[in-house]
Length: 142
Image (cartoon, rainbow, N blue to C red):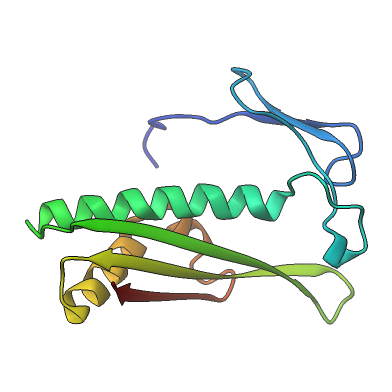
């Protein structure tokens, strides 16, 4: 593998996802964490799944735009919604699954589907999770 283009560094302190803090080395992200109410926690703060979803949605959105530019497809408006689900495993642990919803304007449905699939092949989050967690990708034209 070649040298990294960038290294993101974050540190978790305190009680991790159960009331701890997460902070990046540059201080640009400094947040409190809490277990969501749906998982028996107090809620009221973000959680690792939301952070993962935000990162993946942003990265995937950039991949959609890059693929559209490479193919010289003009998209008038776009968004990506990432849903990251926490699932119980048979062994008593937890796993993840994800759904990526690409929303595009200014293109036909077939083109939107092609852009979403090509972005899924390009996005580092998609490549990191491929074969490791269930992921669905769909596109909607508005």
